[in-house]
Image 1 (tube, rainbow, N blue to C red):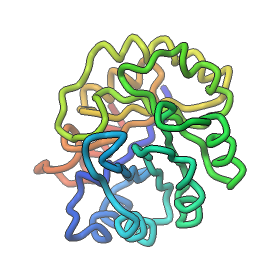
Image 2: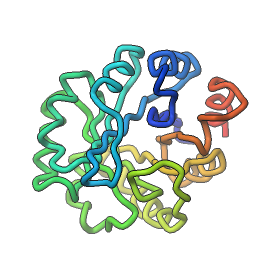
Image 3: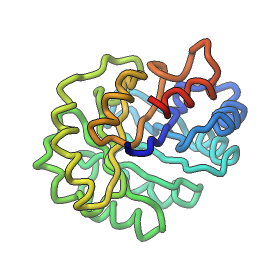
Length: 217
């Protein structure tokens, strides 16, 4: 079985105590801290900011990613790389030169990620797959938490999973990922799971208990 990478979505954490939340999740066994950056233009919402990112980055030595749901992400990757992001996701629809931006991310010594919306076709991104280290498949339309899981995206996951060996990237899923979805999608070849309120936050169990159970599922 593929080793799971469990990635708390920090937009769902307590903003008043981001540093403490990060440390608790780190100690509980989180693998990658996922930070949503939104500009109110590419998606109809605003996300976390530079200060939020810095607070999280200073509180863990583990991997931190940034999901750039913003127009012209290539203008900002150097800034986030400088601040300590390990993985940077861009949306191809938001970038006039996505292949150049992915190459820039790698040239900065970071991992290049491509985010794929539910309505984005495989044909439109196939040429970019040799340039990515992580493929973030959205199982909801991006911009807001609490949306329902879109079952039809699983067909896309099944079609993209075989490309992982050819191009040496990992598939990560993001959007209404419940414990049941972690188990199901892991069997389909997914290794990374962005976890929000569906599986991790706002539960009675401790972070450690939840993450341990998810890892074993």
